[in-house]
Structure formats: C-alpha cells, structure tokens
Amino acid sequence: MFKRAMQPVGEQPPASAEPGSGQHPVTGELIVRLTDVGKMFRRFEQKPFLSRNILKWLTGKRERPRDFWPIRHVSFEIRRGEMIGVVGQNGSGKSTLLRLIAGAAFPTEGVISVRGRVAPLLALGAGFQPDMTGRECVEINATALGLERHEIVARLDDIVTFAELHDFIDTPVRYYSSGMLARLGFSIAVHTDPDLLLVDEVLAVGDHAFQEKCIRRIEAMRDDGVTIFFVSHDGGIVRRLCNRALWLKDGCLMLDGKAADVIAAYETGAR
Amino acid sequence: MRALPDVWVHRRPKGPTWGPLDDEAAAANGAGKASGAAKGAHSASARRATFAHVLGVLTRNEFRARYRSQALGILWSLLNPLVQTAILTVIFSHVAAFKSAVPNYPVYLLMGVVVWQWFSTAINMATQSFIAQADIVKRTVFARQIVPLAAALSYGVNFAMESLLVLALVFIWPSAFKLSPALALVPVVLVILAALIVGVVLATSVLNVVYRDVAFLVSTALTLLYWLTPIIYPLSFVDDGAIPHVYKVLYHLNPIASIMVALRNCLMDGVVPSALTWIGMVGPTALMLAIGWAVFRHYERMVLDYV
Image (cartoon, rainbow over all chains, first blue to last red; front, top):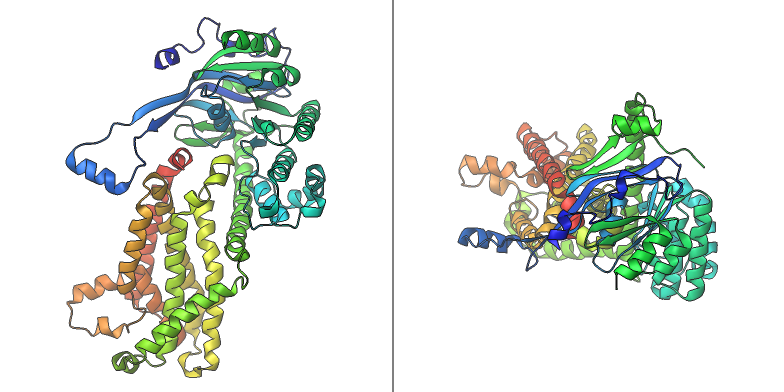
C-alpha cells in the first residue's frame, strides 16, 4: 500500500495537470483545489491514556504508532457546475477525501483551497438528540451546517415539506423511524443553499422512493448550477448523474476523466 | 447563480488561512488580487457573527437537552444545590466555630455552594464535551472552541437561576446582604469567573480527546480544590490560622478561592475586595486563559481525528 502511495497516478498521466481540458467541457470558475494532499492517521494499539503514556515514558517503552495514509499525493481541481462522482472500493480513501474537502479534517500534507458555502452530507442529522423535537433538531443541524438564524426561519417550511414530516415536526425525534430521520437530515442538508454539495453514500439510507426523491433533488440542484461532489460504490448512479468521475485506489487518484470512461475502467480494474 | 466569494479557505496542516489563491491562480481565475485584504476583513466580521450565533444555539440546546426528558424539567437544576445546601447547613450550623466566625452562615454557605456548583459542573462536563458531541464535531464544520464553551455556558444558565434563589434569601436574612457601591463589582467578578472556566475547559476539553483519562484527573483535582476554597469553612480559619504567611498568600492565589472571597465581600460585607484578592483572581485567570488557548490551538486539529 505504501509503495503504491509513492507513485500517485500509476500509469495514467496526472489528471490534475489538465483540469477541464478536452475530455469534459468545463468552463466554470474554480471552486476547489487540492494540491498534493495527504492525510496521515496514527494507529495505536490501545486508546491513548495520559496515565499510560506517562508510565510508558517513565519505563522507556514508548509505543511507536504505526502511520497510515488513507490518502496521499492527491491533486485535482473542481470547477463550478461540475458534478463529480468518486468511486473506489472500501478503504480507498473516499470518505477521508470528502471530510478533507468539507473541512471536517485537516490535511497532513498539501493544501486544500475551497470557497463558497459547502454543505457536507457526511452523515445525516448531525446533532440530533432523541429528546429534541424535529423543529429543534432542524435548528441545531442547520446552524452547525452554517445557516444564519433568519435563513433557518425562512426555510423551515420548505425543509419540513420536502421531508414530508408536517404532522411530526413537533414530536421528539426519539419517536421517529429511521426513514423519517434520514428524510429530515437530507432535507436540511439540501436546503442549506450550498455552492458545493458533498454527498457521502447517504443515498444508501431510506426506502427506494426516498432514494429516488433524493437523486431527483440532487439532479435539480445540479441543473441550478450547484457543484456536486459525490461518493459512491455504485458505478450506476455515478454514470447516471455525473459528468466527471475520479477513481480512488488505496489512497491514490488512479483516474480522472469522463464519468463513463472512469466507471468502465473501475469496473474492469476493480474485479 | 450567485457570485462566489473572492475569499478562499486554505486548509493546511497548520490550520486554515483565509485569502485569495496564489497569484498565478488568481490571474487565471480572473479574480482581483487587490481586493483580497478588504474581503478578508469582511469575512472575519462575518465569522464573528456566525460564532455568536452557533454558540447561542448550541448553548440553548445543551441546556434544553439536559432537562427535556425529566418531568420536573429545569426545577431539578434548583433542587440539587438546594438539597446539598440544606444538608450542609443543617450539619455545619451545629459547628459553633463556623457560626460564630461568620454572621448569617447559611447565606455564606449557599453562596459558596452555588458558585462552586457552576465552576465544578461546567469544568467537569465541558471537559467531556467533545466526546459527548462527537457526532456533530466530526460531521460539520464550525469553530470547535464553541463546543466546550457552549457546555460551560449552559451551566451558567443554571447558575443564573440558582443565583436568584440566593438573592431570595434576602427576605429570610435581610441583614446578610449589604447595599453598597461594591455591588457594582459583582458582574466584574462573575466575568472573571466565566473567563476562568473558559480558560480551564479550553485546555481540558481538547486534552480529554487525546488522552481519555484527563476527565478523571480533572474531577479529582476539583475534589481537592473544593477543600482549598472557602466554601464550607470561614475564610478567617485560613487568614487567622496558625499557618505560615506564604501559604496564606498561595491560598489567595487560588483564583476560585479569591472569586468566592470577592463575591462575599461585595454582597455580604459591602466592601471592595482587597488588592490581594484582585491579584488572586485576575492573575491566575489570565494565565489560565493564555495556557488554555495555547493548548487548544495546539490540539484543535487533532480533536477531529481522535474524537
């Protein structure tokens, strides 16, 4: 894994060197740029305790944490209006990449530059607490996602309507089904009026009808010019929605190009 | 489509910076280079407004969530110190030495308990706040210091309600309170108390994420500090006690002890706190704030990976 990490793009030419050139006609302004980004985690055998560390330090038996790079030497740019799908197997660094762009993690190497309002759908309903009503959860979640007070007030009706939760919005979310929670979480996230929407496998939740509704909503946002960065195992959805795709493998960017081409390569290469 | 802001967030290993892209990119992107500084300033004020808004919402939410599932709701927050003080008062009022040393001993005691309650609960709970709020910390993006601050401030709401209870004692022990210009200093002392709590929890909250046993350490230290603070016993036991002068000065450099002394000076004695008391409050508090902020800045980004 490490060896491959040193040769980022393999036999493919570095795609980041030519954003928007030829393959996919993209003319929008730059909205995200990653320059040689890497993220390192340290793996400890045990949860670190201060007392244990002091003991180890005193006895001279310091544990050497093992370094682990879920993603390394990744560079690319995103332009406004693009809809980019990210494919890769489990552990290929997709979620780490998304968290880095969202700002929910900082890189160990390189720079990530982002502008505009980002809506990270990293997991739905962050900050929901069982005893709070749906309405209160909307306030907390939307605030944490960066909405101002007046924006929350103005959009509450739209959020509730999209989530189809009119009769339950003043019920504690303790009594919500998982589908209702997912609907509310998704509804808040897509109503934050983002410039850049980051979607992390969240479409795996909810029933089929809700998934369809989410996908239609994402398509509508794409048509409104929202830039969308979309992580999925499912090559089918990426092919359907995206104009560009990235293929991550073992933390490296294998391929960056037209969605259909990348998915085809991923599906043959992944087997 | 609305225009994108000229201000970029650059997330680097050492933390975020705000500003335009480097010159080459700015030129390629057609963005003005000169406007960078001005836009950056605007964005800093916007960030401050956002900070206040998020802090307000999270504080309210913390407070609400705590009592939501209980039938008596926020009454519980009053019941606990009430019962605690009642027990302490019944027991220690029988200690003749305490009663004779402090006039209106129950008021003295309740005041100490209420202040200590905020100090200790806020520090204990805010130390664990990142773990408790792991979900929202990992998945959204806002200034992380808000999390421990909101936890600490939400106990300030309890403190405010309990303080009203203390003030109500004026009807039972009218002579316990002195109407004097020194009352104007009470808010100042309370601000120092809040700053002290903030300084402590900025450090302990991030440390507790990286080293999970810090919370135990903090709670043990607080138990120790409880007896180094004039809550139950009169201050005169220390000041007039047969102990070396150095220890007396050190005792007053315990900021929470000095804060207690100052509050009782202003409310019960009607006198302005002494210079030593002011030094004992402001000095250690300022130091703690500086240390807390430095520790927080150092561990801030690790929190995201460890929580």
